[in-house]
Image 1: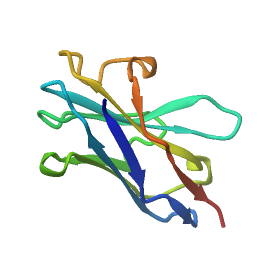
Image 2: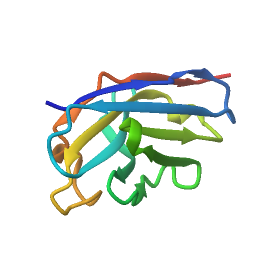
Image 3: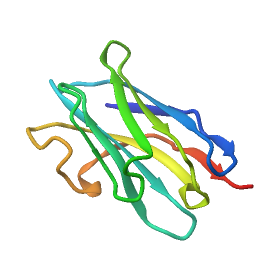
Image 4: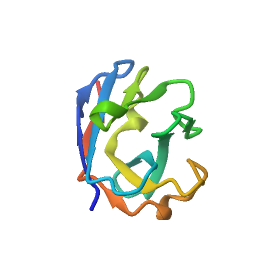
Length: 126
């Protein structure tokens, strides 16, 4: 069973930066895709970014494009989300999620991810 633990959330002022980490364990498949998602109060979860652990291919949500970067450290089974130029609308709980790649990579809907972390809160406010 895949387990995911997020960390690095916190409170920052607009324009600030945060780096989130997602440590994964319990991988059983040969290749995994890991996504970052967020949920603002009263809204549904939306995609922030995604990365394939095998070859590091990334995709990003439109709302964060150009302001975030996802990377991975395969030796530590860790995925990072570097967020810059943060805005108040970036506030929310950030989750990482994992799913066996199965050749789909990051081209899959949110509901195709079945292993989720507990989330970490990000608050952007002046």
